[in-house]
Length: 197
Picture 1 (cartoon, rainbow, N blue to C red):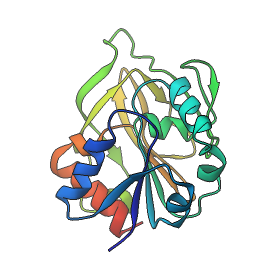
Picture 2: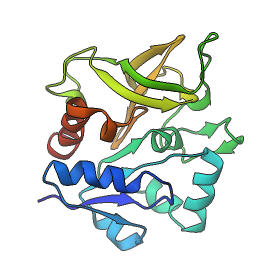
Picture 3: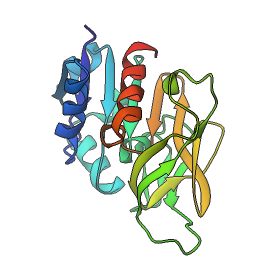
C-alpha cells in the first residue's frame, strides 16, 4: 500500500481530499512533518483561499524548501496547482517555482467569476494522469485565478478563454479542478495518480 501524504497547508479542504482517498481504499495521512513528507511515496498539495495566505502558511511551517526538493510524484489541487508556478497576481506573491507560468485573474470575457461548476476538460489521450477517462469529461471547478496554457499544460478547459486544467513538470503535477468533488472521473484521476504515475 503506497504511503500517501497530504501536505498540511493549513487550508480548509484537507479532510475532503483525505476522504476521497479513503473511498478508493487508500490510506492517506495529513501531515506537516518534514520527515513524513520526504519519506512519502506520493504527495498531495491541496489549497483553497489565497496564494498569499497559502505561501505564508508554507513559509511559517518551513515547508517551502522541502517541497521544492521533492523527487517523488506530487499532485497539486486547485490553489495547490497554482502554487507550483512562479508567481501569482493574487497578492503579487512569488510562489514555489516548480514549473514555469504564472497565476492571474481568469480573463473570463464577461462571464461571472468565480468560474464555478462542471466544465469539460480536453487532454491528450496518452496522458497517464487521465488514463481510462474519456476526453471532454466534465470536472468540478471553483476558481477566479488561472494559469493560461503554456509548455507545462497537459489539459485545458475553456471559460471565456482556454486555461490550464492540468500542468506537469518532472515529478510535479497539478490540476485546477477538484478531483475530490468530481465524482467518478475525479476518483479515477486520483487512482491514476497513485497507480500510474
